[in-house]
Image (cartoon, rainbow, N blue to C red; front, side):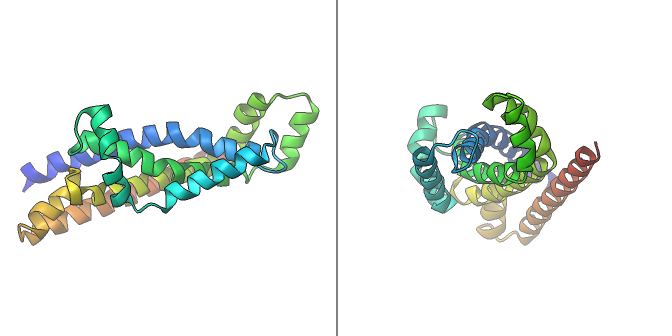
Length: 213
């Protein structure tokens, strides 16, 4: 069993690691833009905010499996194929990006507006407020949000196994469901649960440490 479980676990970790990085690269700036361009924001752009808000809402409305199928052509363009662990990173990243944007938006909105107003009164520029006020002040909440994102991506990666995405989800479906090997399915599910619990524990600990500092 180990010869099946270990490669699948490594595939899942590979997918989750790179999908998290790429989804943050895509979603973090979107979340910042949502905060600074909203009505009353430090760079108020109501029309731009409404368009961006609408696009993010539309993308979040797509069920992941449908979005993954729709993004097959993009996966083929970027990595040269539509099936497999590497190809799955493309739809995973894009599916998680709107979620990341909302998480970042929510975290940054928790920052005391008085701190922002004080920075503006002292002549701080918009980039300075973003990188020296908003992000540092919201860091504990951002850590928890990123933790939630990673857990979300683990769930997506398991679903991707239904259409050849690789990883533990693929193993559970191919051998556990279709191969009637219940033990493999149970072990796969337990490993996924342990991954989620471990990441949540580490995220909570890190957020508390940063908050104390």
